[in-house]
Image (cartoon, rainbow, N blue to C red; front, side, top):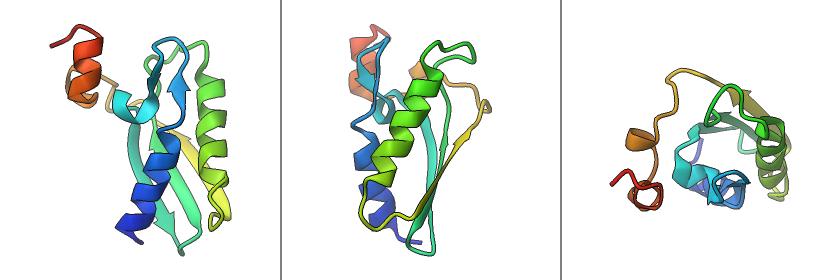
Amino acid sequence: MSTLQEDVVRESIRTVVDPELGINIVDLGLIYGIKVEDNSDVVVQMTLTSPACPVGAVIQAQAHQAVKKLPWVKEVKIDLVWSPRWDPRTMSSEEVQMELGIL
């Protein structure tokens, strides 16, 4: 497992924007974990802003596509998790917190 590969995956996922908020899902704090297995299989643990997110399937598909386009990636698995529950006050970047009016 390579931290460099995980960073590359994270940067690729950063291109995925929550259409309701207009902010990328990495800075929102929706990515809980990235694991690169055997240097080619990627598992992404992520959540959504709410269980009833109307664009959840779209966001998951876009995250999958963003990772899959990396030339060394063979398989991508997106694990949707609900625990811990997403909280923008503690999980999003400082810039996002300012944009959302939390700070």
